Image 1 (cartoon, rainbow, N blue to C red):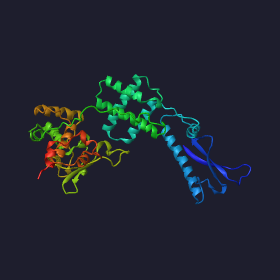
Image 2 (image 1 turned 90 degrees about the vertical axis):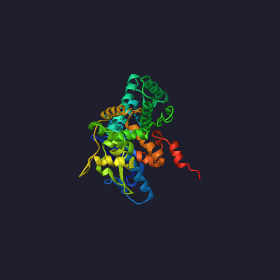
Image 3 (image 1 turned 90 degrees about the horizontal axis):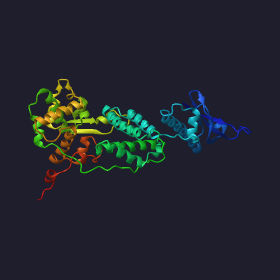
Length: 394
């Protein structure tokens, strides 16, 4: 696809100001030229470099307008080529000039969002999570015969209908909330693409239920997992879990931990400095969500255990499902009432930091890999141990 500008001279007087027209060429065929409304003296037009010569403010503004037209047409082409395979040069010109308006279905918005996920996330886990939730949204559209529903007709009522549909399938309330967040992401994306003028789900919000669950392991339970004499295969799992308890690392982050991410920190102690797994390889979220964690002696001991003369070789590798299966066995052997998961390890880490060590929420957020403290409350909260440490009467 090419965008060219052509000077159309005044037929009666070729030396007077002429109008610059735009020509779109696609697959060797060009559309009817349309006016840019930019006027210029023929002697000032540089056709080779596609710009107006001169140094005045008017020349600068007009060149900027031509550049913006080219940029807008290119963006429009890239946005629509995926869903309009028979897009022609004339069709593109008509889209740009407003002679023809693209009518998307909501299903096409879902497909555009899927393509963005594939581009912006390289993490297999993140892709899998999005794929599962988008598949449920597709299933809803199919069962409700909404595949041909116009994009702007997916209103608050449809979002409520999706929630009722999900509840009828016995999906967890918190899980449904994650689906509705994706629905909102889809319509927000459509507004940014200029497919929708207004976001129909802008005010939609599904409230979370009840109290936030911040259950965690007690200190004696952590000690029992760390000191029990496990058989070889369970010892590797116990090491992984204890490491997450003392570092806050999620499953994927622990599995992908490398030697260069374990290094001396600002204070000379050994730290983990690692981008969060879901963002580490993202082309979209570059440089965001970095975990910075000074290592507890138990975590340092585990690093040393899995190191050789050449350095740290990485933590034991195991599938997520296999990991959870072995954690059930550990839980049974030690008669721990709380179900052992990596999320429980992260909640225990948060409790230790907030209430045992008195670390600030800002520092805990940084160690969990969050940019703000907003999500810390989902992992742990200050309790009487923290209050006792901070409140001293003299």
